[in-house]
Length: 168
Image 1 (cartoon, rainbow, N blue to C red):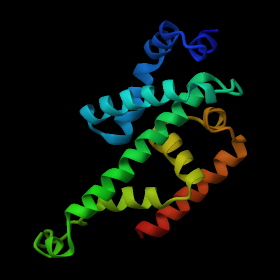
Image 2 (image 1 turned 45 degrees about the vertical axis):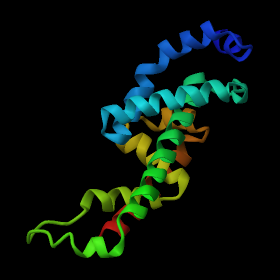
Image 3 (image 1 turned 90 degrees about the horizontal axis):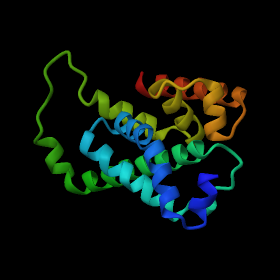
Image 4 (image 1 turned 120 degrees about the vertical axis):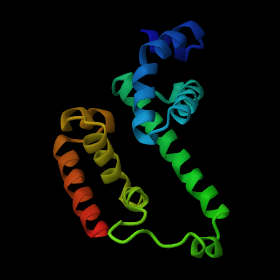
C-alpha cells in the first residue's frame, strides 16, 4: 500500500500520493479561498502538514478523507490568521473614514456571510461547506467527516437555520 510505504519514510510513495491528490486538494483550497495564488500556497501547506502528520493516519478511512479534513483545517486556520491580521490593521478610526455605501446596497454582505459561516459550530460549519459549497453528498460527507449520514443531514439543517437567523 502506497500510504504505508510513505508512512515508513518512502518519499517516492508520498510523491505518488501527492500527484494522485494534488488537483483535488487544490480545488478545495480554491473553492474555499477564491484566490489562485493563495490556493496554491495552501495546497503546498496541506501536503507539508500531511507529510509531517502522516503517522497519525490510521487507515480507519480512505486516505483522501483524512487528507481532505487536514486540508480543510489548513484553510480554516489560514482564514482565522488572516482575520486576526486584518483586525490589527484596521482600527476603529479607520472604519469611520470608509464612508457610507450607496443606498440600496448591503455593505459587507460577503463579509457578513463569511463571518456567519465562521461562527457556526464546527460540525455544522464543516458539513455546510462540504455540502453547500463543495457539492458533496451526505454519504460522502459521512465518510470524510467520520459521522453518520443522519448526523450530516442534521448538521446541515442546523447550519442553514443558524445562517438564516444571523443574516436576517
